Amino acid sequence: MTPSVIRSGAACGAEIVFDLSREMDAPTFRAIERAFHDNIVVVFRGQQLTNERQIAFSRRFGELEIHIVKKYLLAGFPEILLISNVKDEQGEHIGLADAGFTWHTDTSYRRRPSRCSLLYAKEVPHRDGRPLGDTVFASTIAAYEALPDAMKKRIHGLKAIHRYSARRRVPESPRPKLTGEQLAQTPDIAHPIVRTHPYNGRRSLYITAGECIGIEGMPQDEALDLIAELDAHCVRPEFLYRHKWQLGDLLMWDNATSMHLAICDYALPERRLMHRTTVIGTVPF
Ligand code: SIN
Image (cartoon, rainbow, N blue to C red; front, top):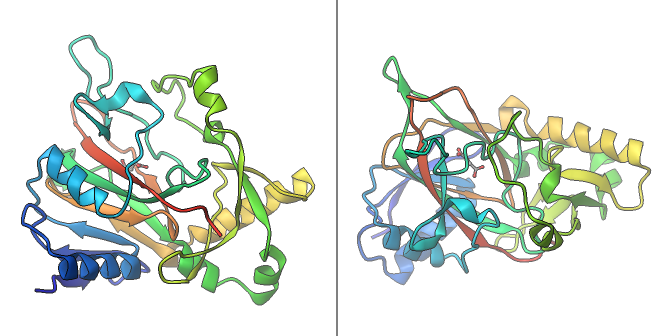
């Protein structure tokens, strides 16, 4: 049976009604994959997933990435990265406490950046009955399509340079610094500013001010101005979908056609705990 899809009405985002703890045949998976590509960000509400089940569902989309920050991998399940502000008895964060606090797309610093990421809500902070810690997504397809023709021509064929450590972190970020060896595994990488989706051929913008440090063959000042202009364009309100979390949400997003931002408007004792799996994608073209 084809799962029903309820669109958010925003530039991206939809709910897919399906219990992911059930067996899923190939036609159902294909319908889900199509709805995912069409809507860029999809949520499965009210899930009760074991770690194994989240990993198995994620693997249907491809090989899983083991995150470079090893400290926050779930014990026994290195495919799951903990994103959390919760602290253990020693006062140490149990997960990445500052993940996604600037606009980005996941692992764009890789030669094969992430195809998609899946975030499973285990604890959602609330205040006065309202959820906190929303995640905001921008459709970079809608952003590309809205560009004036002159800008489309200007950026055609250009490549931006992405860097892991370029991202602005929160002041006094608790995130461990990468070792020299880890940094050597993430050299700067150039990707096309205009990407073609490997599954549906749609074009999108692939550039963020937080990750991109230049544009190949362009003077630095001009490149930084262009990166800032495109980044600001992508996050115009009409391209956004804001996800309000519920416990048991399994949210997944297409990293080729969106960028996202985690809103940090909560603090302990308001607890947030997410389990993230990340699927490796193809080389952008
Ligand atoms: C991320 O950027 O992967 C984290 C998003 C979130 O925690 O909402």
